Image (cartoon, rainbow, N blue to C red; front, side, top):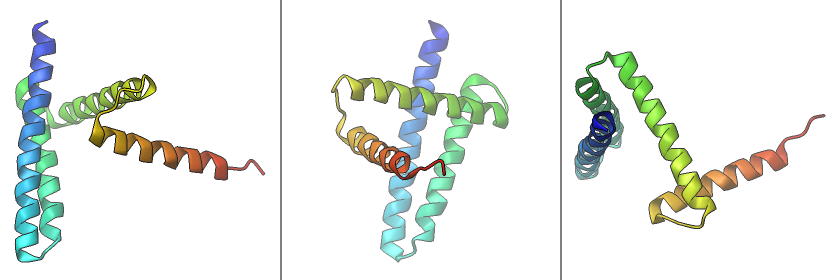
Length: 113
């Protein structure tokens, strides 16, 4: 139970930190008219997420990246399960419907010969 609450806290804290960094970089990039600052902010947010996982779980950078990948896969599976049962979260519904249309169009355009 302790590890689960630790993982939950790490995900929550990393999401809050990343959101703050991305929002600040977005406003600074809009203020100065340089879109590169927004991209730099996203890279900094990614590194901050890895730093949170690294410090919470006492692992290296590679293991922190592995934890991030596993967490992303679990979130996608959870959202797919919610989507199947008709439970929607507005922002995730937009993401999942665009993902569905991408795979649907890709599969229809795929041919074996």
